[in-house]
Length: 322
Image (cartoon, rainbow, N blue to C red; front, side, top):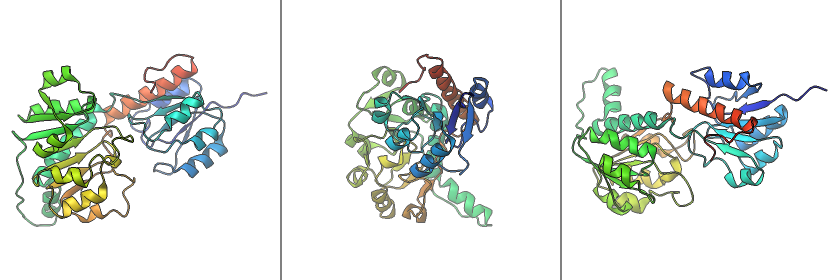
């Protein structure tokens, strides 16, 4: 009797896409990789159908696809769910724990990539760079009056590794750095020069607000209409964390009515972004969840996810178990 294939279902669209090393690590350890061919995150029913067709599946490598209790029940051989990224809000951790399924992620792998994008978005919003590019390509010579970033105040909500990386870059712009986090990193704050304050005070005093909090029941719609009305009408809101940190309907009203100057968003409550009124506005920059999309970050995330799976099947404790 032949042994069943050691199948791994890879739904993450970027896993091993820009480097063959993560794929090689798994194949060298006897795994067969089955790929998401839809070129977008899978919905629950689509993943259920795929799991039935390719079973047995012993591991998942996922991006933002929902990994629910139903999906775990459809893969009784499943031993490990490897998140190709950091945030695990799309994975039912309680259900995984009940079934003895190990969940891993890749902390630290995309810190610098996301922080770089944050600053690209900040400067683009402050100086209307996308609009200037668009009009110049069409033969116009419009002048756009922006605002300087130098010497302003940035508020960082969620001062974890990515928030700290954003703060370090803010020092180069001679900025006052405000931070809000339920568990403040006082050592890093002293080293970088972060002033911890209340969320309300941060929103009132910041010229730029950048979100880096995890998504959970306490942070869902953390930025709602009440919070947006606290901000300066010259302020810029940047979100590269999770879409549901922001009430997008309230944000639309804030941008349309001038409660804040602009927003720059890499993440949304529903992805891909479809039928959103935000696309009608000129004072918002929209990018398709590309925070971790650098060659370097993709390599680090892929290798970390692959090594975690190998460690689990060798009976070792994975380095990045959630």
